[in-house]
Image 1: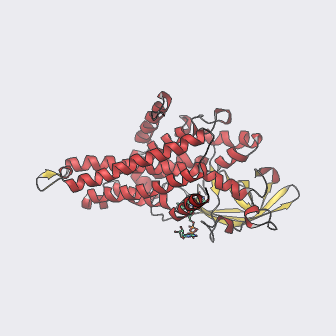
Image 2: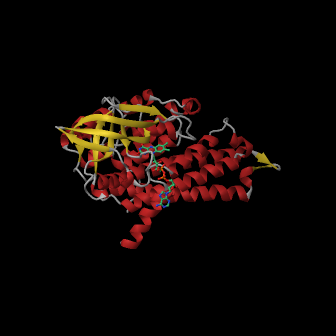
Image 3: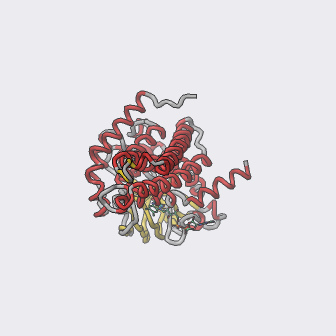
Length: 380
Ligand SMILES: Cc1cc2nc3c(=O)[nH]c(=O)nc-3n(C[C@H](O)[C@H](O)[C@H](O)COP(=O)(O)OP(=O)(O)OC[C@H]3O[C@@H](n4cnc5c(N)ncnc54)[C@H](O)[C@@H]3O)c2cc1C
């Protein structure tokens, strides 16, 4: 067993950290205030191989695997999780193309995203069903050599800025629910698509989130990803990877909370001593550090298993669940340790406190992860 990063991975870690420090830190507060999406940062990151680093080189990526991508996600999220999402989630949806698409689909859709020219989105959630994936209603009906899509999606990351999306649609309504879905690549400029940005998010406000409506949208049947009727299962396996990446976001944010808190309690004094001298303070830092270390183990084991060709659905759910919990826990303690200063915008911990909550909601709520893990424990 070897817990060391390779020399290459250490270099990637250093590069990602420097990139975040030099490009994200200075604009973090303004992007949060103004809900500003940053395509120029994404393009710059792509030029350094930081977008879609998990994609093999033959499809335009850096071939760094999921461990490499976790390292990048962690380092960028240590500085600003919202801007980090613009970089790391530019490929969101591409995981399905990579896992289930034809070679031609991979050659067509993956390289421009890794190169920073295009952005993908994963369009699954609908206004009336999120956790209940089998409850989605968007329909894709065959007509000639096309699918005609009608329906709507909501909360779609990169919704207004994406060039194409991978959408979950019902293609086989006569089949049982779980056999009725398919994943379809939909170019964002397809006539009949309306995209509306959602404003006023609690956190990750630099990321783009949108509602997408489809009205008689025609896409070629050649855009079907994987097997018709297999979309539900494909989406579940898609989460094997993407939940680990969300856990890596949580790891980065939690580390930022701890590092900033350690610095603060060494400087700030109360009753004649630095806050760090008090055991109640040390307890908070210690609890944060233990959780972070445990989370790191989950994230990197789950990522390593994906790279080894043995993705573990349950471990991904555990990493995602514990990631959300850890980030919310650490952000809460970070605000508390900063006292009143933790509550105002002068210090970033208030932003991290707001950002952290999404980690318990998207890519499956914490209850959805519990359902996954609970089922596994009883069926294994
Ligand atoms: C900023 C942001 C970005 C997002 N990005 C994307 C994206 O890119 N693509 C995409 O497709 N979606 C995205 N989402 C959607 C997100 O994945 C969903 O919001 C999430 O899955 C929950 O779905 P819901 O909002 O419909 O809540 P619901 O499913 O209505 O759940 C509401 C509550 O009920 C609980 N619940 C539901 N079922 C059960 C049950 N059986 N037992 C116990 N509790 C239950 C849930 O855990 C939750 O607490 C994003 C959301 C946000 C806020």
